Every structure is written in structure tokens, then in C-alpha cells.
Image 1 (cartoon, rainbow, N blue to C red):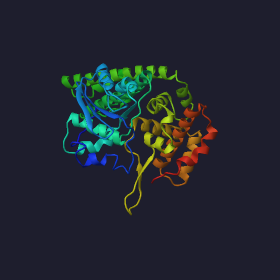
Image 2 (tube, rainbow, N blue to C red; image 1 turned 120 degrees about the vertical axis):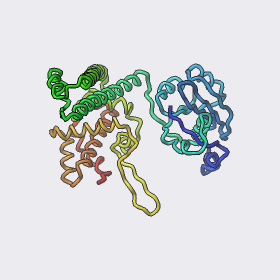
Image 3 (tube, helix red, strand yellow; image 1 turned 90 degrees about the vertical axis):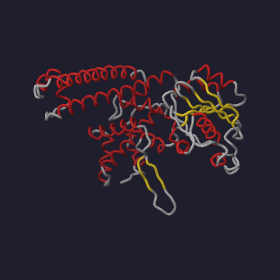
Length: 382
């Protein structure tokens, strides 16, 4: 899990800021026990504060579901539980959700203030996180609703990792040849029949050739893993009606459709398109202070796999030309938008189309795309 910490709360100024009296007279979100877990593989720190912010329990537990459930059940009254997003968050959320009244898997970046304060240790981390939960300052991180969906998402993530590993191995091979003045491309050594000729261009050093052959073995293994995982991914994706409908949209193939599906998980997570676009990495963030100008930039803290998928789909739709998204691109280009801004607008239009199809259950209808053009042009930046 992620770790964070700060000085003792609520005795300091930050504890005072989290009291209901300071919050413009508002009450805490719920008169309940606020429970936080600071989770590690070997142990978990648990801290409980009451509705007035007083620490009522702190203990170290083993990181097992039966132990954590037993500890939660010993806490009387309503229970609100939080822990930070991390490798074990999905497992914990699935198994602990039914034992509490509310569960929030929180965003670690929003807890950055804790990490920058003075004192830090695991018990303090849990206590401060419970105080943040009580004050309503935590940002929830969405979790898949079922084990099957979670496993599917993990498979897609592993597929993307294997693709990156294949690229890394190819780059290492090209760099190894380049060190000796031999310039090759991946397609040249991807064909095993051409490798003997490539080796002949290297210096006659046995150790060097052994290293190259070892790198080829790693590359071949990555290629086979990518091929196998892609086949399994598509077989699983064909079972989802919404993914099959996504593949009808220009620029969207099985991999992009599935990546969009598993990472968004449900279209009902977002109330507005602006929030949806920011999550995809194609929306805008604004900042303003005092009498200064309003600054606008593309959202930074985003899901990079989703951003690459939707921008790649936009690029492919533009390249294929014979579709309404290309027509949109040409119009934005004629209006003076740069290539990057016009492509990002196409990505927004694509995302809005997929989002609408998912919510309504409709098939892809090209005639509706142009009607949504206005929704993607209002937030352009140069």
C-alpha cells in the first residue's frame, strides 16, 4: 500500500481545522466511528476515531480477512472504513465492504499534506487518515463490483505490460547492434531467418553474440506471450455485448474497446462529460488566483492507458478518413485549431459516443456524431 504520515492529530492546528465547529457550522458527514487501515503485507495498523475526533482505538493486526473482519465487528455502532488505493485495495474492498456501513478506498495523492508534515509512523498514518475520513476530505477511488470484472481488468493490464516488455526487448536489441555501428529495425530481427545475417555484421566476439542471442530469446518469449494474451483477451471480450458494439465505432478495435470497458467499468461513475473527459486524460483543468489570469491545461493526473487508447483511436479514425470523426477533424482544422487540439476534440467526440452507447444500449449511429460536435469544441486550448 501507499504510505503517508504527519504530526500528531488532533492536538495540532490541523486537528482543529478538521473539527465540525470550524467547518462553517456543518456537522461531520455521519455520527459514526471512522476507521482507517494502513495496510502492509506483514501487518495492518488500525485506528478508530469517534464523531468528535477522539482516538478511541489503535491496534496492529495481521493482514488477513478473518482478522480484519473480527476487529471491525468489535467496533459498535455505525462504521465508516477507509484505506488508500494500492495493490491490495481491490481484495480488501471486496471482502470488507459488507462488514461496514460505508467504505472509501481513497486517493493517496489527495493525502499529500500528511506525507509532508513532520512526524510519521504507521500508527499515526492510520489515525490521521481516520480524521480525514471524519472531515469528509477523502477522494474515493472506484473499485470493480465483482471478482470476475476485477480479474478481467487485471488481464488487460497484464497484456499492456507484456506489450511494453516486448517493446523494451526490441529497443535493447537495436541498441546493442547500434553500439557496433549496425543499424537495424525490429521487423528485421522479428523474422528469425534473417538473424544469422545480422549476427554476421557484428564483431567476431563470442560473448557479444551470446548476449544478442539471449536478448533474442527474451524477445521471442515476449512476442509469444503477447500473442497468447491477445487471443485470450479477445475471446473474453467477445462475451460482452457492449464491447462488441464499441468495435463498430471508427478507430476502435478489440484492444481499445476492452481497455475502455474495463477501466471505465461503468458509465454511471460520471455525472458530466467534463469529469469523464478529465478521467480519460483529454479534459481540461483550470486554475485561478487573485487578479491573475485563469490558466487552462490538459488534465495531468489521469489513467495513461485510457488516454493512450482514446487518443490512438482518434488518430486511427483521422487516418482512415471515411467517417464522421474525420469530417469533424477537417472542420476544426479549417477553423485554425492545431493538430493536437483538433485530435483531442476528435477523442472527446469518440469518448462521448462510446459513453452514450454504453448508457443507452444503442448501436453506433454515425448520423448522431455530428450533432455532438459542439460538446467537444468549447474547451479548446492553443
